Length: 553
Image 1 (tube, rainbow, N blue to C red):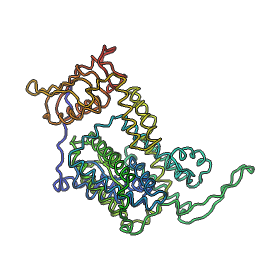
Image 2 (cartoon, helix red, strand yellow):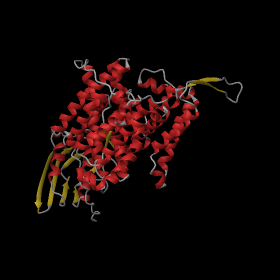
Image 3 (cartoon, rainbow, N blue to C red):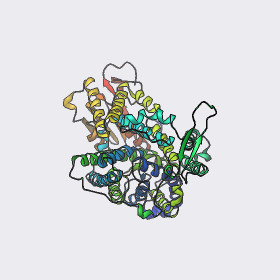
């Protein structure tokens, strides 16, 4: 086995890290700020919150949470994955009154964040492992579909006459027929820019954030079409037989934000705290927000040049504290956001100070240039969200899940349908039930469902033998996940799966990721017993069952 390339020496943290790396972190923070500004506005508006709510969250995430969290290069702020949760909460609690729903949802965010903080304090950070990979990806794909179905109408400049999600999806063809040409041109241009930017190879152009280009082009087109002033224009087709159309454009197609940033603060209304409906929203916000934040923080660790481990419990506590403050002053909940965090790593961010600088630049910008924010067309922000939604639910996501195994695709699709037909909590529960049924059909011994039988021993100096027996799957491997980090670095690990009757995709993925990370940190590993199992597909991380192998693994 070839030795991995050495991991560079990690930079200092705290004030010493600021003195050592401020140039790198300030530059990366500035570039992330350029990406974050339009996304914060768009996510807030898509969530049925005021636009400044997203900026409030990113500022708190940068200035406060960056100082107390347990990660190094993550960027904290509002995320597309929470749009559906917050939008549904505003609708359910407000019962048609958007402002009342906003204030009730702020109260729900505060309560959810207190629970989130306690979860981190009591070290519940590993609970994200309890959710099967296919269910999590199915939930995110469903969120992507919902985001696209809602934002396509805004991109086209049309307000659909729909009350349910499926009605909103069904109205998409009508919105294309009735689109507002000038608004649709702004949104369509923004979407085209993002598509082109995704295929760019020139590294100098790639340094310019695509969302920034979308906003700048949108600003120019908004001025050209005079969206600042309400007026009516005629659309005259070349064919004289076709009817003429009148369209209205004006400030309603632009972002509305107070000139005084402090005036954008709002405060929660706790008057529904005694109702079941209120606590349903609290649980949903807490569950989805915590799950997304933990998964994102763990994913960003894999991108970190210095291969540092985030303290997920501390990170969850810090995010919970930040979210409590956000709920008290009118902001959205935040997570460790994967897209902006990836941009931070790619732009040379070295410490958590890059997150701080990103928040500081946002604060300076909204304090000095609120009028410029008002000139951003909503269609440009909708283009960003449609593109984000497509990435969450692209055909490539279905293809990747199918490659792992047909049973994972079944769980993935069932989760999507469950979320679309009900809500996120019920949809995730339906997906987990589907995963259990899959294991039942694969003859799991149900007395082993809640307990994984494993043993970790140092059989020789520097060699740790990890033997797994029985059924290993998402519902019972938390104990293994908790045990492995106690193994010293730089040793040799031997995972012995010879006696494991079944190993599901979630556990295979965990073992693979843990071993790869352990090797990057100077250790070695070996996995035994896979040749005694039959996998559900050719994918190396496919679920497998002990039996007569039909091919070498």
